[in-house]
Image (cartoon, rainbow, N blue to C red; front, side, top):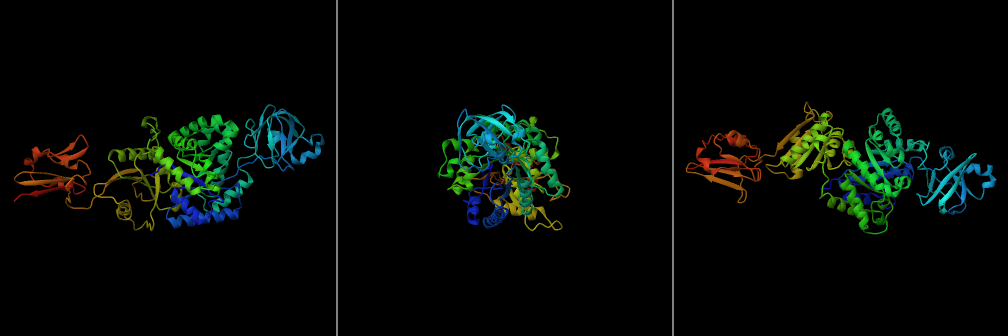
Length: 558
């Protein structure tokens, strides 16, 4: 099972029901809808197609709407502006060009009305994703004089970055508010907030969601230097962090991105916050059917850093090979996960929260008893988020009765959502309605163990929330046996059989037998028969009574 999740941006190459179905089967867990492009009508149809495709392939995926945020761009120009190194230009709003005819041949128009106010002498101004660089010299009334350091041809609508300035434009614009309301109306599962700079940016959106009585997780995109400086405060109020390496590389410099990425992922891992690593992970697959070796290493290193998910942008939205790209990313993740990241030490974890303690206990118990799965019974998904933080070696099934929670779980590391249909609170039997179905779906056999946690909400709780239980699969009343799995010992009065294929190694027989007939094998931690002591057996069948799997049988000899 692949543990890290894949977020894929949908676009012209991947917006049909059939193509989305292929992406889901290839490994897409979260579908990203980029609100920077398209209309509400086209986005509504895309979300509808995602839901239909999920139904067709019987696998839910989460829908993430990614808000555009404030955009600082060059306005329309008649022809590309030739910015030569060492030359001086001015920058300002388009409407101010008429006021300063002396600058008509060296005027860079911008759509951002606060640029001149936000700028200061000595600040860097970057154009077209940092391909061109200028330095602010001095303000002249409503425009700013700048000197070109790295030149090039500047075209209309190219982006402008002000990495050294405290940009006054809000992270949550009026367009973003309209897009968020649209997303809520159309059942989005996550919302990503662009160009977050401080915790107040996130709190503004949280307050709005609270007012609307909507519980949708917020993903804070870290791409500004101010956000990196304020990361600890932002993490206190956000649900998920995204390492948005595109604008981050422009703002802080590409040479710093790898170390910043490691710092953010480490901080998120320590704070139990899911983190997504994004941008240009398999960029060459936009045009080619295979990635470069450097790109494969980039994905693998993000997994080894501890990221919960990796994201595709143009590769899956507009590339020639969207399905192949997801398939390749899934393969890289699976290979990287063969060398697992070292888990956090218990002594370094904050276990003051009862739910966290239960999830850690469940992870350790499942590992020690060699459980087949951890069944995390959850209403909100919070328990699964906690258990994912500990990176359990045992696979987790997030069992819930809410489709919204199923979709939310699609982003959580190592968690497979498991929807319980036809849930009736008044007539519900956990063993019959959950365990039997899980047993059939997973093809479990006698002796297999499941660790069951119940950690949040009312769902399934009935007084048993914040609990851990080990369930041993047991059906057969007697030993079926097999040539390779049956241990046999006998004397003139009896024959004792132990089927090791279904023995749960619970040591119940060891504890109840006063004659030391049953002993644990120190080499493989399995129970075995002490043949030297079987003559002491009184055949009271107490060991059979306490055996949960029917692995023991005592046959009297005629």
